[in-house]
Length: 247
Image (cartoon, rainbow, N blue to C red; front, side, top):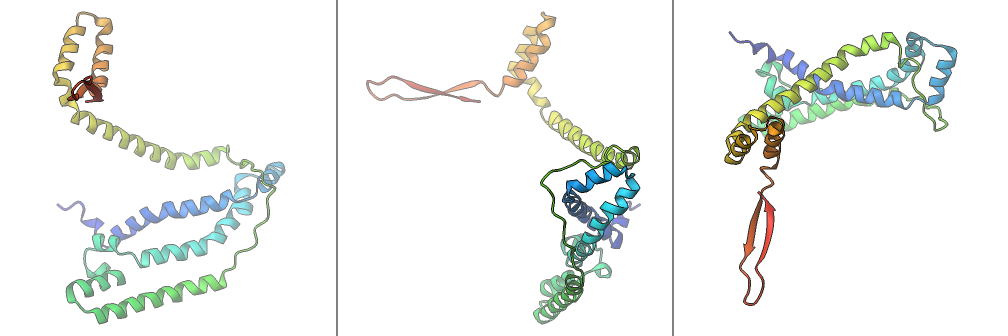
């Protein structure tokens, strides 16, 4: 039974594009919200605005201003995507113009058709991007006094409940990744426990139960720092010179 077949084709391409472009969109929106003057947040706190009113009056105009240009940029990135479509496309049914150009050059060696496809791709991108650049105007941003203020809804229980699932999932994924990396590196270093110096230190520390653990840890930590003398043959009438380096 093929458990990973669903990943190839249009579903896999969409998932990959969401995986790569969602953090980019979140970063753009976060930067736009961070540029809101602090006077707006202080005024919202003085007026006692609830989170829904803050989103409608302060957040939504900023997000709506950035959304068209960001949507156009992400669309162009997906429209000209090559590596993701080539890897997860699964066939010509989910190919893009980039993959078609690659196929014409790599397999058919048809440079004329590849050039026409490239011109078609550029024309489509220009036709889709220019109206957004010309028709959508960005309103003038208000100047700030140079001070920052905390959002009045930062400690709202509703906001905390909304942010808890994605933040918890992110921290769990990060902790799991670190635990796996630590376990893999620990398994790879198991052979160091059977070195002669570690065994001698363990045998010496066994009679003293208090110093057993500390001596074993110290032996494992310092086994790479054993000084090894590298001496040079002295010239006639000179002293023998040695320098030590970590093993």
